[in-house]
Structures are given as C-alpha cells and as structure tokens.
Amino acid sequence: MKKQILIVDGYNMIGFWPELVRLKNQERLEDARDLLLKRLSSYAKYEGIEVIVVFDAQLVPGVTQSYRKHHLEVIFTEEGTTADTYIEKMAGELNNVLTQVTVATSDLAEQWVIFSQGALRVSARELYKLLEKNDKNIENHQKELKFSHFRRNSPWDNEQLILLNQKLTELSQKKKK
Image (cartoon, rainbow, N blue to C red; front, side, top):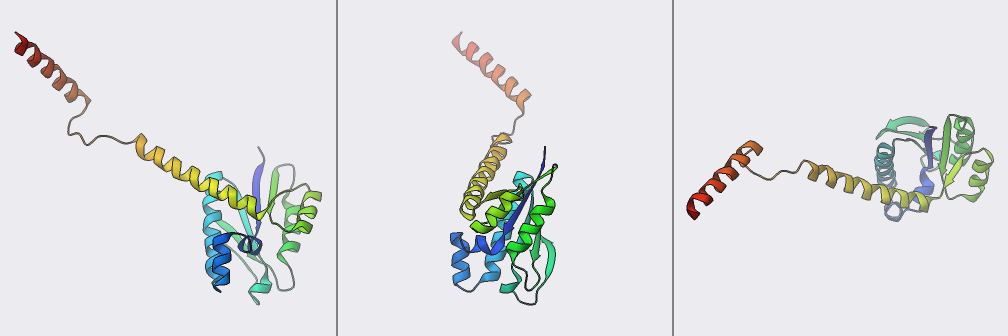
C-alpha cells in the first residue's frame, strides 16, 4: 500500500472553514492556525497519514521556518515564495510509485498543476467534511471502547454469582416443600 501524504494550503483552509474564518475576522490569525493544526493532527493520527501544512510567509513577514507541531510538519515559506508554488514543487517531488500525495486547496490553478503531476486534490470544503466525519468516527470509537469494558458495579465475580444463583434455587425449592 502506498504511503499517504496530505499537503494542506493552510491559509486556503483558514479562508474557507467557518470557525477559522470567524477567528481570522476577529484578527486572531494565530488562533486560527493553531485550531487548524489541532484538527488536522487528530485526522492524521486517526487515519494514519502524514500531513504537511504550508503557510505563506507574506502573512507572517520575516518568518521562514519549518517545524513539527501536533505531530504535523508545519512550513512557513520564504518571503517571495507563495504557498502555492512551494506546494506544487513539493507535490512533484514527493509523489512517486511508493507515495500518493493529496493536496488540500480550493485554488483551481493549483489543482490543475497538482493533477498534471499525478497527485490528487481535495478542496477546502471536502477536507472540512472529511474532518467532520473523522471527528464523529473518533467519538463513536470512544463510546465503543467505553462500553466494551463496561461492567456493572457488582461486588461479586462470576463464580460468586453462580453460587448465589444456586443458593437462590435451593431456597426456592425448600420453600415450595
């Protein structure tokens, strides 16, 4: 099976996802980035895929860095390099026989370039829906785990319950006589 890598255009998601747009409009861009990373981290862990999030340096001037946060690779492009250009180059380098790259963006021009390199694409809206579904799956999985180990608050083990049941049967038979 091919290794799955999801490359996300960070500011593209922030411009489309309702809760992230709200934070951006309140001039809380850092909070929007952090929430995006947390949501993507949960998705990456549950699905078992590698996620790389790319942000334009133009919105955070002077910052050129790459680091790991929430088990994701986070990249701020160099000044003068757009996230689109960086993502297109990275997708071309990473997509091969052993690796399937999917790029999350709603930028149509970028999608065409991605397709021409053999990578897949998912729009901001589609990724948002995938994450919503993923959150529900995680919640259901947690409920299943909780109830699979659920046990009544009984002070007796199975052997004792069998003995008690036998005693009850015995007493019931004596009473009938």
